Length: 312
Ligand code: TA6
Image 1 (cartoon, helix red, strand yellow):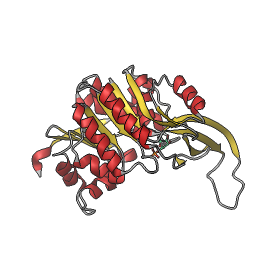
Image 2: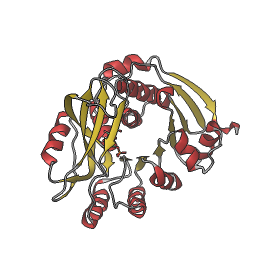
Image 3: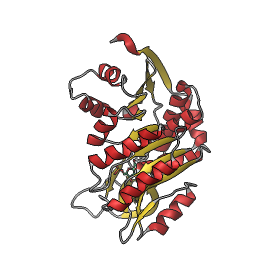
Image 4: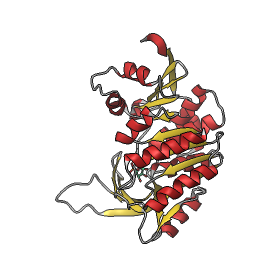
């Protein structure tokens, strides 16, 4: 089984405007719609689209639970959330211009999680997770969820012997890297920060960090990615597509990557698929839509160069 953990889920409110938002102008909204938000939920959505059994875990608020459940049912995402009473799952506003590419994302902070629910999550993990499972923690933590809380969570997961993937940032990423989790996906700046060396050559930085992480992916946005695994370094070039919204593209990559590993595909195939899926996502305006058919066509345009990791 694959579990995704979204510590701070969101409901994305998509605000479509005609042109780019400008100050001192009435920026009229021409259309609004809703999507699930929070990186782990997107990972779950992708896994479901690939037919890979998964369950979304995390903390949600009682006040707008029906709305979130409706969106998750549409995306065929099964879940077992812990609920905080009297608060709402945060909204993440995403502004999408109909005439230009890219999106603006403005997430709310979210609610404080009670000690009882933090403990309940640890109990849930001890009860559900087995050594054959994969667990992906993705997205920002809610206010008051400390680094110490995250360390206990990681320790609890690693104690089960399962595969642990983390798509997190800042101090949480530092900690995940230090604890040698199985998968992380920093960007170029983050990997240099991880090594406390802003001037490090990117490939040198990857080679150094790869010693402690089984699957290390470094995302380079529209320029593709690097992946280091098992003594090999891969440079992946992404297909160029007409961008509508990049929101959720990284999550789509993670979901497809984990789906590929779960299906035990060769790594080059996993990387091609994940890159094709995230390129397809970029062509869609909302936060989670991508097409398996589009992704299959796009993955044929993905180029992978393989290098030995031991050069440096
Ligand atoms: O990556 C896209 C997304 O998951 C959005 O759907 C949005 O809700 C946001 O990211 C939340 O990001 P955060 O880092 O705060 O968890």
